[in-house]
Image 1 (tube, rainbow, N blue to C red):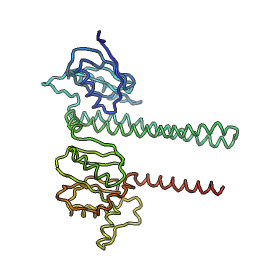
Image 2 (cartoon, helix red, strand yellow; image 1 turned 45 degrees about the vertical axis):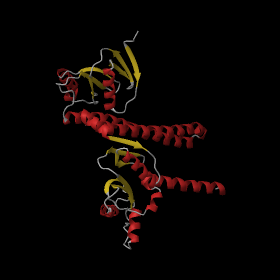
Image 3 (cartoon, rainbow, N blue to C red; image 1 turned 180 degrees about the vertical axis):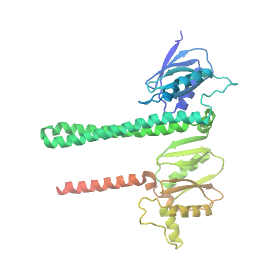
Image 4 (tube, rainbow, N blue to C red; image 1 turned 120 degrees about the horizontal axis):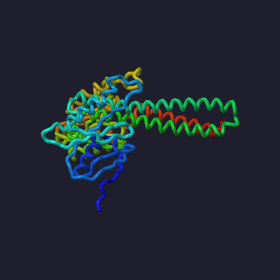
Length: 365
């Protein structure tokens, strides 16, 4: 005998994907009735229907205004008039609404830009506040750790006990900062996707993708991008390990990477003055990038994206572009374009510290 209810555990970062999943469940005859812990879903069996789901938040600040107190009541009345009913809400006060699909009706609760912006801001503010709370907690714990260090100097017999607290603080700081960063990124991503209507989100989902990959050499990077091009995708943006693509319109596209070092190599070969600024420690002076763009456009390349002032990726038609740099540099490491300026400083500092520590240990200092 078939059960009339069932439970599923599923964790979503994207509310749009969660909504799509709930609608697919309804088409199979399973309808949402409750959510616990943000990922423990309870469904009841019924006749399969084409249902639409929406979400919103209704948490009040500690000192709400009259408008904020009444907002939920006004919204619920308006939603009910439009045919939407409240299903449930989770512990984070995210409310779920549903409505049976009607081709002649407006099937989105947030069907204008202003209402979508207002909702998106509520969700991003919630996650960003969580991130700030994590940072405050870390600051407080580190302050307590500092006080315990002072206490251990006063009471040496507590040194062993307090040293364990130091390990706890280190672990907690790493975990809390990781959570703060995660909350911040989720808030930003949630705001971006909730600003889109249903059709815009579906179109973006079908026509864009992100690939995670750690690539160290320029040759391997160009080969990877070429493989994606052959599968129907062209690059739009890059981070250290993430590559963002859209469905391509152009055919036979190839890529090249340029940097300040490579640009100055070209200038030296032409016996021209190299571009440098001794005062520009962080690479913010874009003179080299301006020159790189001129060189690239002269040879038929199109700008794709820049990597934090350190490198530029170009794209062009394989039959039209001329090589920007000598092919022998294709085997060179992406180097600083991978780890970033601050990452390089940390890496060098760690190596220098390790060498000093090793030499000091060998000399018995």
